[in-house]
Amino acid sequence: MDNFDEYIRQGEPNKADKAIVWKTAIGLQKVDGLIPSDYLIATAKQNIEGDISIDEVKHLIDSYYKQNPEKDNKNRTEEADKVSARIAEILSEQTFTFSPAEYLSIHHRLFQNIYSHAGKIRDYNITKKECVLNGETVLYASAKSLKATLEYDFEQEKKFNYKGLNEQEIIEHIAQFISHLWQIPIFGEGNTRTTAIFLIKYLRKLGFKRVNNDLFEKHSWYFRNALVRANYEDLSRGIHKTDKFLIYFLSNLLLDKKYSLRNREIHVLFNDTVNTNIDTVKSENDTVNDTVLNLIKQNNNITATEICEKLNISLSTAKRRLKKLKESGIIKRIGSDKTGHWKIL
Image (cartoon, rainbow, N blue to C red; front, side, top):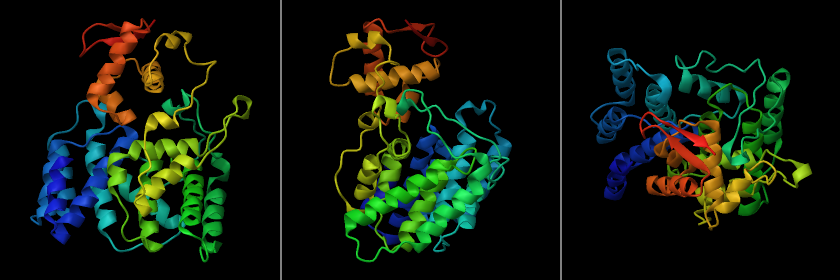
C-alpha cells in the first residue's frame, strides 16, 4: 500500500484522489481476510497515472483471470482483485440514492459473477463465529423479516432530523444507524464491504466531504469488529452492546480525532470458555494471545501472516505471540512451517 502514498504526497489533486480511492478499495478486503495481487496493484497505479480508465482496469483484471485461473481458491485473490476494482469505480462516481435499492445495487455491483446471490436478499438464517467474541456469534435478523427490517431502518433514518445536533450527537446517531444496517444482515456474504461503501457514499450525501478514508485502509478489521461489538450482548455474563468502538472509528473518520483503534481493546474474554492454561501467559498483551489462540481453534492451519492480517498487527508481533504460546506449553507446531498445523495442548 505504500506504493500509493507517494501520489498523495505529491499533491496532484486527480492522482491523489484516485490513490485515496484505491487505498480504501484494497484495504477493505481485509475485513474478509483477503489480499489483492501485485497485478492488481500495478494495474491500479496505471489508473492513477491516467494511462487507463477504471473500465480498462476491470477488463484487464477479467482477462488476467481468464488466462490465469486460480487453481486454489483458498486465498480468494481473484475476488479481492475484482471487488477492489469495483469499489474504486463506485467511490469514483458522484451519484447516490439513499434507499434499500441502492444498498442492494452496491452489493450486486461488487459481487456479480463472484457470488451467485449478488444483490439478492438471503433466504436462509446465518451465524458467524467471531474471534473477537471467542467464537460466539451475533444474533442476526431472521431471513423471514429481512426485507421489512431493511425498509423500516431506511424509513426511520429518512425521517430523522439532524438539525440542532452537535458533532458528537451526529456521530452517535450515524453509529447507531450503520450498526443496525449491518446487523440485519441482508446478504449471505459481503455485508461489511457493502455496508462500508454505502456508509462512505451516505456520509458524502450528508455533507462530509473530507472523510478520512485512510481508516478503511488501515483499520478495516477494527471497523468490522466494532460493528460486532455494537450488536452483541450476553447479560448473563455482564456483556452489553456498545457503540463505543464504532463511535471512536467514526470520530477519527469524520472529525480527525485520535482515538486508539486497537482490536485487542474490543475483544471479549469469557473466563469460563478460555482455556485455563492461558493463565500461564502473564503480560500486558494477554488479550492478543487469547485472540491468537481462538484463531487457531477456528483454523489450525492458520499462518502468522493470516493472523497479522486478521488482528491488524505486524507480522513480527504475530510471530512473537505464537512463540510465547508455544513456550508456555499451550500450543505445539506439528510438521513444517509451510505444510504443518497447530495443535492445542
